[in-house]
Image 1 (cartoon, rainbow, N blue to C red):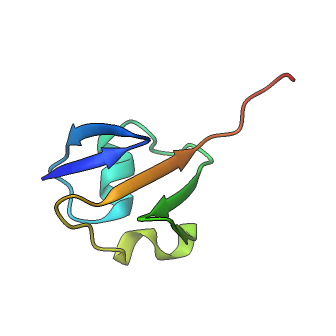
Image 2: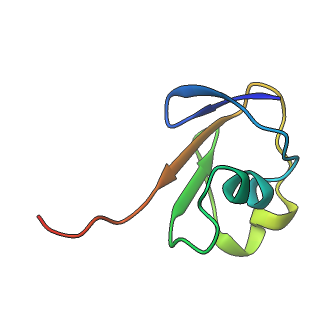
Image 3: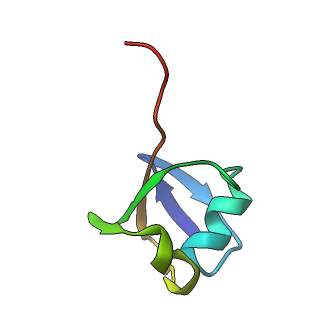
Length: 65
């Protein structure tokens, strides 16, 4: 399905947010996530379904200033 990931259009086969994070290379990373502007806690990602056209925001902490 086609999603917007951090503002960019991406094709993702995953059906849940957790699977999408793994597919996009965030497996094991400490990130904050939102779907369509709503914060999704890590504990809810495995059951959070994704739909065609959803907008994902994935934020990772960065070192330095």
